[in-house]
Length: 114
Image (cartoon, rainbow, N blue to C red; front, side, top):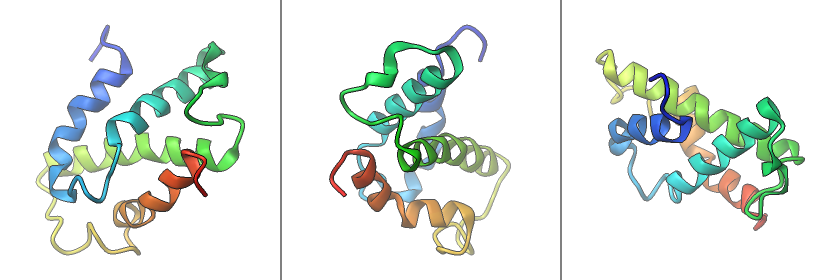
């Protein structure tokens, strides 16, 4: 949606992802905020590079936050098109299921706990 900050677009998109479960995607809104800050840092050169909550110079953090934005976009688009998640969405071999499977580990790395 034009004119709306990216954070609000992503928050709107996650409303359809509830079936993945909040327990599997802890602190999702906080991670979205960080992902948008990271995107802005690399796209616009904003001061978010010195975020208190994540190290945007760490490749693992940037990879996870970029993957988060891709996950939200892809999963919400597929669900909107009628995707039946019962066969693959939570399998670790599936790109979306793999993201959910490894979310906790990547959350810990991004938060500096790993």
